[in-house]
Image (cartoon, rainbow, N blue to C red; front, top):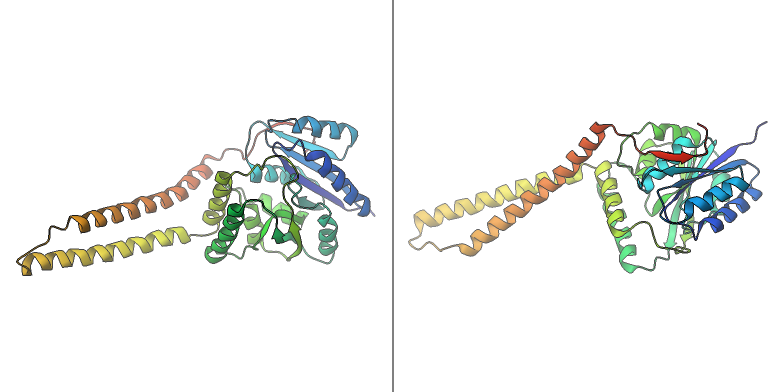
Length: 311
């Protein structure tokens, strides 16, 4: 009987200080699990020596595979590329900054062998140095849980193990603005979790800036909820009713009061308020239209410059 195979997908962006340690810890995991395995490093156009380090590992270890992008396409796309190129019966997604412990793969494998299709890692606590970032994460997950049309597990990232049939279904979802944890939740299947305490980054600078985190949050909200459009509609109805009240009050004052106030302050407040609502509404609609335009172009999700994987 053939052994099962686990593919580990590792997106990489400027992680030269962490790759060696991550590789050693993952290899230790597979000493304890009697399975075949492959490690797929997806280099998202790193500016440091990450790719060189990965290639050196690949020379020494045939289980090390790599995909090198022609430019930076982003973390979620890098993971998607790994999913497309992997060949394992089970697939693990893990970041290369060592905040997620590779040793948790053992617990995930035990659970997935009990009949689950997806086992994701749920953060019991996180040791982020930034209080602002920690608060932003909590706020995002609360907003997402309220407005999402599906139930997306809270306090989770992309660190998880999936069966190949889940990956096959995931690859059929061809949208360009990826939010993988939401897409996997949308697929359904039999899912469970293992809890852990998320550590701080081992070394180097985080690849996710506040702007990138904001864009990811926006992708998650827009991809899995029409609530922003409904909010825009509600605001429009509210402004219309408020404007109607002001119009009626103005007409009443003009016809039935001898003295009609000049109304500069109320006029300015009304104009600025209505203008602000209009711009906000146009911006929300524009985000949805922009995503429609991106999908209509049908451009490839990523471009591979170099790889040692034979598809």
